[in-house]
Length: 233
Image (tube, rainbow, N blue to C red):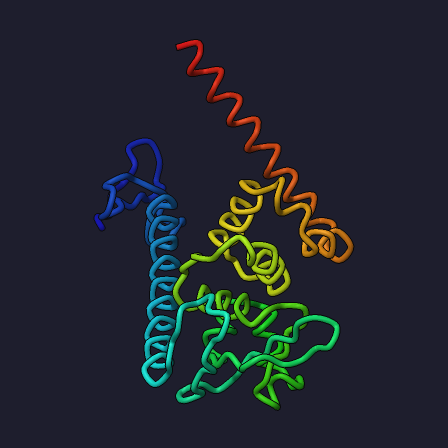
């Protein structure tokens, strides 16, 4: 960067080597626009590094396990090799445990502040290495953990409610899985609103019901607007 003197004052200016714009010397180092851009780039790189670490961990985890289709009705239990924590789905009133879903504490903690609080503090989950999750099927839990590792939101309509609840409960910044869940639900509103899961959701998470209906209404408005636009053209 070059030092220059302003013609009308004694104040010094600096020239940003990136954009070649002048800025006051007391602003320090670089102009605000370039600083913000560099900061955003740094955050993007950090996220990419976290994603790569998660995928490497996922590949190691899958290396020694029989990894059947995500939604198999007779899943083969995972191997716990390379993992340091397991998640267990407790479904229904009986709370009968399903096969364990192995994972890595570092990955879960980096993906969810709720998991981070569990695993970084002296809570039961941290001491035992087991996280029990109520009212969720084994298949839905596997799909959720798979998403945490791979960002793959491929699931069927039967899991839409469960994944929506899991993403909300564990505060995962899973915009894709939230959008995919809402899209799956709104596309099948007539059928899915009659399911038992929807009735349970109305009692347990009414704010999610509001979110579902808002998404459905927004979709109807957009569809109507598109039809109106096409008719006018």
